[in-house]
Image 1 (cartoon, helix red, strand yellow):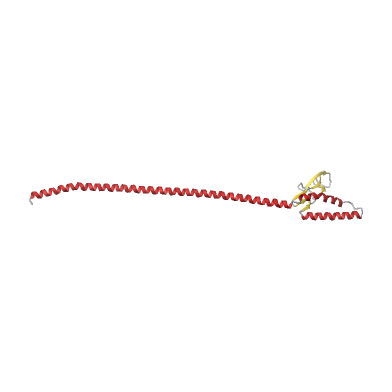
Image 2 (tube, one colour; image 1 turned 180 degrees about the horizontal axis):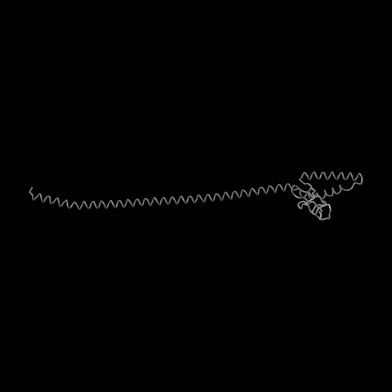
Length: 215
Protein backbone atom coordinates (compact mmCIF):
# COMPACT_ATOMS: atom_id res chain seq x y z
CA UNK A 1 0.00 0.00 0.00
CA UNK A 2 1.33 3.34 -0.96
CA UNK A 3 1.80 6.27 1.37
CA UNK A 4 -1.10 8.07 -0.20
CA UNK A 5 -3.46 5.23 0.42
CA UNK A 6 -2.31 4.91 4.04
CA UNK A 7 -2.91 8.59 4.57
CA UNK A 8 -6.39 8.42 3.11
CA UNK A 9 -7.19 5.38 5.23
CA UNK A 10 -6.03 7.13 8.43
CA UNK A 11 -7.95 10.24 7.44
CA UNK A 12 -11.05 8.10 6.96
CA UNK A 13 -10.63 6.58 10.44
CA UNK A 14 -10.24 10.01 11.95
CA UNK A 15 -13.46 11.12 10.31
CA UNK A 16 -15.28 8.08 11.62
CA UNK A 17 -13.87 8.68 15.09
CA UNK A 18 -14.94 12.31 14.87
CA UNK A 19 -18.45 11.24 13.94
CA UNK A 20 -18.63 8.65 16.75
CA UNK A 21 -17.42 11.10 19.38
CA UNK A 22 -20.50 13.36 19.18
CA UNK A 23 -22.68 10.29 19.26
CA UNK A 24 -21.00 9.10 22.47
CA UNK A 25 -21.45 12.54 24.05
CA UNK A 26 -25.12 12.51 23.12
CA UNK A 27 -25.47 9.06 24.62
CA UNK A 28 -23.80 10.22 27.83
CA UNK A 29 -26.02 13.30 27.98
CA UNK A 30 -29.10 11.20 27.31
CA UNK A 31 -27.99 8.74 29.95
CA UNK A 32 -27.44 11.55 32.41
CA UNK A 33 -30.86 12.96 31.56
CA UNK A 34 -32.44 9.54 32.10
CA UNK A 35 -30.68 9.23 35.41
CA UNK A 36 -31.90 12.68 36.46
CA UNK A 37 -35.45 11.83 35.38
CA UNK A 38 -35.21 8.52 37.21
CA UNK A 39 -33.86 10.32 40.28
CA UNK A 40 -36.71 12.86 40.10
CA UNK A 41 -39.23 10.05 39.63
CA UNK A 42 -37.73 8.21 42.60
CA UNK A 43 -37.95 11.34 44.76
CA UNK A 44 -41.52 11.92 43.63
CA UNK A 45 -42.34 8.31 44.42
CA UNK A 46 -40.73 8.63 47.84
CA UNK A 47 -42.71 11.83 48.43
CA UNK A 48 -45.90 10.06 47.36
CA UNK A 49 -45.12 7.19 49.70
CA UNK A 50 -44.36 9.62 52.54
CA UNK A 51 -47.55 11.56 51.80
CA UNK A 52 -49.54 8.34 51.66
CA UNK A 53 -48.02 7.15 54.95
CA UNK A 54 -48.68 10.54 56.51
CA UNK A 55 -52.29 10.40 55.32
CA UNK A 56 -52.65 6.90 56.69
CA UNK A 57 -51.08 8.00 59.97
CA UNK A 58 -53.46 10.94 60.21
CA UNK A 59 -56.36 8.64 59.36
CA UNK A 60 -55.27 6.20 62.08
CA UNK A 61 -54.83 9.09 64.54
CA UNK A 62 -58.29 10.39 63.62
CA UNK A 63 -59.79 6.93 64.11
CA UNK A 64 -58.00 6.55 67.44
CA UNK A 65 -59.22 9.97 68.53
CA UNK A 66 -62.74 9.06 67.41
CA UNK A 67 -62.52 5.78 69.33
CA UNK A 68 -61.31 7.62 72.43
CA UNK A 69 -64.23 10.05 72.15
CA UNK A 70 -66.64 7.13 71.74
CA UNK A 71 -65.14 5.35 74.78
CA UNK A 72 -65.39 8.55 76.85
CA UNK A 73 -69.01 9.00 75.74
CA UNK A 74 -69.84 5.40 76.68
CA UNK A 75 -68.17 5.85 80.07
CA UNK A 76 -70.25 8.98 80.68
CA UNK A 77 -73.43 7.10 79.74
CA UNK A 78 -72.49 4.20 82.03
CA UNK A 79 -71.82 6.61 84.90
CA UNK A 80 -75.15 8.33 84.26
CA UNK A 81 -77.00 5.00 84.23
CA UNK A 82 -75.24 3.91 87.43
CA UNK A 83 -76.23 7.19 89.10
CA UNK A 84 -79.86 6.74 88.00
CA UNK A 85 -79.82 3.15 89.26
CA UNK A 86 -78.42 4.16 92.65
CA UNK A 87 -80.96 6.97 92.99
CA UNK A 88 -83.84 4.70 92.01
CA UNK A 89 -82.62 2.01 94.38
CA UNK A 90 -82.29 4.53 97.23
CA UNK A 91 -85.79 5.88 96.56
CA UNK A 92 -87.18 2.34 96.49
CA UNK A 93 -85.42 1.50 99.75
CA UNK A 94 -86.77 4.66 101.41
CA UNK A 95 -90.26 3.84 100.14
CA UNK A 96 -89.99 0.27 101.44
CA UNK A 97 -88.86 1.48 104.89
CA UNK A 98 -91.62 4.08 105.02
CA UNK A 99 -94.25 1.50 104.08
CA UNK A 100 -92.93 -0.90 106.73
CA UNK A 101 -93.03 1.87 109.32
CA UNK A 102 -96.58 2.83 108.35
CA UNK A 103 -97.59 -0.83 108.45
CA UNK A 104 -96.12 -1.29 111.93
CA UNK A 105 -97.80 1.91 113.10
CA UNK A 106 -101.12 0.77 111.65
CA UNK A 107 -100.81 -2.51 113.54
CA UNK A 108 -99.55 -0.89 116.75
CA UNK A 109 -102.24 1.76 116.88
CA UNK A 110 -105.11 -0.22 115.38
CA UNK A 111 -106.93 -0.27 118.76
CA UNK A 112 -106.20 3.39 119.57
CA UNK A 113 -109.75 4.60 118.99
CA UNK A 114 -111.22 1.66 120.91
CA UNK A 115 -108.96 2.41 123.90
CA UNK A 116 -109.92 6.08 123.74
CA UNK A 117 -113.59 5.12 123.87
CA UNK A 118 -112.95 3.05 127.03
CA UNK A 119 -111.35 5.91 128.97
CA UNK A 120 -114.70 7.43 130.10
CA UNK A 121 -115.61 4.01 131.49
CA UNK A 122 -112.40 3.96 133.52
CA UNK A 123 -113.12 7.51 134.70
CA UNK A 124 -116.58 6.51 135.90
CA UNK A 125 -115.24 3.47 137.71
CA UNK A 126 -112.55 5.49 139.44
CA UNK A 127 -115.11 8.06 140.55
CA UNK A 128 -117.26 5.28 141.94
CA UNK A 129 -114.25 3.78 143.71
CA UNK A 130 -113.59 7.08 145.47
CA UNK A 131 -117.09 7.28 146.98
CA UNK A 132 -117.02 7.32 150.78
CA UNK A 133 -117.86 4.03 152.40
CA UNK A 134 -121.16 3.93 154.27
CA UNK A 135 -121.72 0.26 154.96
CA UNK A 136 -120.53 -3.19 154.05
CA UNK A 137 -122.48 -3.20 150.78
CA UNK A 138 -120.73 -0.05 149.58
CA UNK A 139 -117.37 -1.48 150.69
CA UNK A 140 -117.99 -4.62 148.68
CA UNK A 141 -119.04 -2.55 145.66
CA UNK A 142 -115.87 -0.47 145.93
CA UNK A 143 -113.79 -3.61 146.18
CA UNK A 144 -115.40 -4.99 143.02
CA UNK A 145 -114.91 -1.68 141.22
CA UNK A 146 -111.25 -1.54 142.17
CA UNK A 147 -110.75 -5.10 140.90
CA UNK A 148 -112.42 -4.10 137.61
CA UNK A 149 -110.16 -1.07 137.31
CA UNK A 150 -107.14 -3.27 138.01
CA UNK A 151 -108.17 -5.65 135.21
CA UNK A 152 -108.61 -2.72 132.85
CA UNK A 153 -105.14 -1.44 133.69
CA UNK A 154 -103.56 -4.84 133.08
CA UNK A 155 -105.30 -5.02 129.73
CA UNK A 156 -104.17 -1.49 128.91
CA UNK A 157 -100.60 -2.29 129.90
CA UNK A 158 -100.63 -5.34 127.64
CA UNK A 159 -101.41 -3.07 124.68
CA UNK A 160 -98.94 -0.35 125.57
CA UNK A 161 -101.43 2.00 127.25
CA UNK A 162 -100.41 3.68 130.49
CA UNK A 163 -101.45 6.70 132.60
CA UNK A 164 -99.48 9.94 132.29
CA UNK A 165 -97.27 10.31 135.35
CA UNK A 166 -98.25 13.04 137.79
CA UNK A 167 -95.66 15.81 137.94
CA UNK A 168 -95.73 19.30 139.41
CA UNK A 169 -94.38 21.10 136.33
CA UNK A 170 -96.79 21.74 133.48
CA UNK A 171 -95.83 20.06 130.21
CA UNK A 172 -97.87 21.15 127.18
CA UNK A 173 -96.98 17.89 125.45
CA UNK A 174 -98.95 15.79 127.96
CA UNK A 175 -101.03 18.32 129.92
CA UNK A 176 -103.98 20.49 129.05
CA UNK A 177 -104.66 23.43 131.37
CA UNK A 178 -108.40 24.00 131.71
CA UNK A 179 -108.20 26.69 134.40
CA UNK A 180 -105.89 28.89 136.45
CA UNK A 181 -106.36 29.15 140.23
CA UNK A 182 -104.82 31.04 143.10
CA UNK A 183 -102.51 28.92 145.23
CA UNK A 184 -100.10 29.85 147.99
CA UNK A 185 -98.50 26.41 147.91
CA UNK A 186 -97.58 26.45 144.20
CA UNK A 187 -95.46 28.64 142.00
CA UNK A 188 -96.93 30.23 138.90
CA UNK A 189 -97.41 27.65 136.15
CA UNK A 190 -97.23 24.63 138.45
CA UNK A 191 -99.98 22.04 138.42
CA UNK A 192 -102.40 22.54 141.32
CA UNK A 193 -104.86 19.70 140.68
CA UNK A 194 -105.38 16.87 138.23
CA UNK A 195 -108.96 17.06 137.01
CA UNK A 196 -108.85 14.14 134.59
CA UNK A 197 -106.17 11.51 134.21
CA UNK A 198 -104.27 11.39 130.92
CA UNK A 199 -103.08 8.32 129.02
CA UNK A 200 -100.43 7.44 126.43
CA UNK A 201 -100.40 4.63 123.90
CA UNK A 202 -96.80 3.65 123.20
CA UNK A 203 -95.19 6.97 122.18
CA UNK A 204 -98.45 8.82 121.42
CA UNK A 205 -100.74 10.82 123.62
CA UNK A 206 -104.05 9.00 123.83
CA UNK A 207 -105.56 11.74 125.99
CA UNK A 208 -103.80 14.66 127.69
CA UNK A 209 -104.11 15.13 131.44
CA UNK A 210 -106.66 17.81 132.32
CA UNK A 211 -105.19 20.07 135.05
CA UNK A 212 -105.55 23.36 136.82
CA UNK A 213 -102.45 25.47 137.19
CA UNK A 214 -101.39 28.22 139.57
CA UNK A 215 -101.59 31.81 138.43
